[in-house]
Length: 326
Picture (tube, helix red, strand yellow):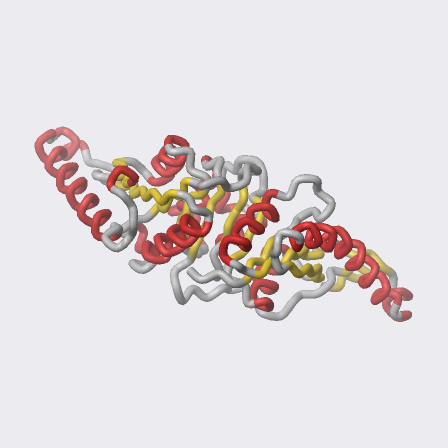
């Protein structure tokens, strides 16, 4: 994982606390990477036909962009004092998650850093919130910031699935471990790994459940297989055995529990974009786990993932008198 440019989503340039900017700056210094502070202007502009015909709309656009660039420049000036190469930008585009993906493509970013929306969702994969959509649509790794505490020799937890539940790509674990190692080394932290597995299917027939010997044999076989696959996946990773956690439990329960136990600062996971009924029934482990994690989450995609986000910007969102213009 080679990071040369980092795109930081700044939701409110006037905010007093900017944990995403602070942590992105830490990573930029560690990697010697460039930083861009970006604000997507998705606010609807209400105007009239006269304004459109007279050309005053361009003046309105320039004035609004200038108002947003000023606080971004003040933030950038503070970061430049720490020998970080920082640029700023504010572009008209919507929705915000698409604006982020397009800007990341434009500057050839290697990582997107964004603050996670606060609050718990009962069914996150059914909502159209920026962070969830960013996880689904971004072809780049996305670091979602949930904690305001700066990194200090952080514990990095790589959540892998060498048994490839729900047909996950076999190379995804390699991407997770590669990214975890890069972050851990850059921040001089420690690397841990977790694999959660289920020894029995979710629904077990009455005949099978009544046969204790058969159940025990299935559980032992599943445990041995999971241990073998876990060890094979970590063969080239520098994760001491004391920092490996093989948990017989669902990933949704096991990953947050291990993260809390070891006081993890970053959990690194993989995500696969799904749609339709399959997305509803299976959901997405990264999205569901995100609800229960209090630490930051770095989400990576398998190599070759194609983002469905169009390359052309939507521009300014206008509502004119008597008509709607997109």
